[in-house]
Image 1 (cartoon, one colour):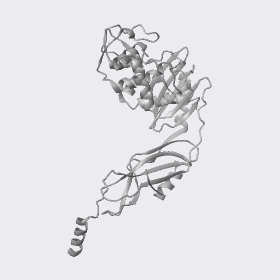
Image 2 (cartoon, helix red, strand yellow):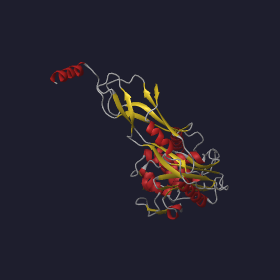
Image 3 (cartoon, one colour):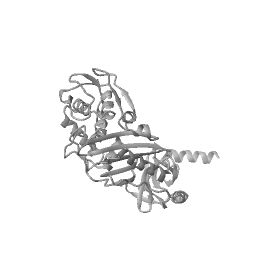
Amino acid sequence: MNGRRLRLLAALLAAVGTAFMAFAAKASPALMTRASAAALIESETGRLLAAKNEDLMLPMASTTKIMTALVVLENCSADDIVKVPAEAVGVEGSSVYLEEGEEISVGDLLYGLMLASGNDAAVALAVHTAGSVSAFADMMNSRAEDMGLTRTHFITPNGLHDERHLTTARELCLITREALKVPEFREIVSTKYHTAQSGSRPRTFKNKNSLLWEYDGAFGVKTGYTMAAGRCLVFGAERDGMTVIGALLNCRPMFETAVELMDGAFESWEKRTLVSRDQQIGGVFIENGTESILEVRAKDSIIDVAQSGAEHAYTTSALIRDGLAAPISRGEVVGELSVWDGDVLVGRADLVAAYDVGRKDLRYWWQLLIKRFAA
């Protein structure tokens, strides 16, 4: 945005800069060295809270199915009926034991995919959604590209080993963050048991993620295992308004490591609202306006996740649009607010007009003249 930088609200700068500097120090979690790669992020900001080899490309086994479920949910209805193709029958590894030609809903297949980790369910969903497994893999890769991921590549919808089928711990967290924006996805992965209401016979699926039973606030997400990938886990939990998402690749004590990482995050990190949505930020001059000073507000919140005990010198700056002149409509973007922690950008939010401002036209001057004579 072209414009002029203005320093707004000294009081806000002072408050933001000093309000979060006195917190008791707490120890960070010790990341177990037995994981080949690990990452833990805060969901709203994407802030990396803990990591080891987070950008190393590795096989991810059935955690692949997070992207599979996301692509299916974005392109199909849960009520759609899938006629099971021959290629989905007898797929190696974890299975929900589909039968050729049976008719089962997309919704039930998604539960079979994410709870029972059905490799056959993944193939059935892929063929239903895209016409073939390879075409579905193209959709998965396109979706990853849309997210800005550069170190993720899918070959299969189920994670069965292929040397070209790879991701990183960090990007697996970001895929999960995107999937959790879909309410149906979060509902599925946080379910402990599901009984399918469609298909040729009754099926009850039990979630393989023991954290759902053992960790307060846990909501999933997906386990995985192949000999090549080792034990993999994507996990998440929410406490006190903060949601964390983690990924472990090739980690034998995966549930214990997940607990250690989440405990450390909830004990040592805090989510802070530095600027609230609709917060009044200040006033800007409007050329030829019926109001010379326009009140501006933050369109969205600016959030930071900061480690307790660390000092933060937050500052704010505003970039105001050049040539700002009436008329201005309520909600119109007139600038941009930035919050910095030292030289690190914490976040940005558009600045919007708090109300309409008319132009000083002939009618305005005529009405003003009448008022003066009437007085």
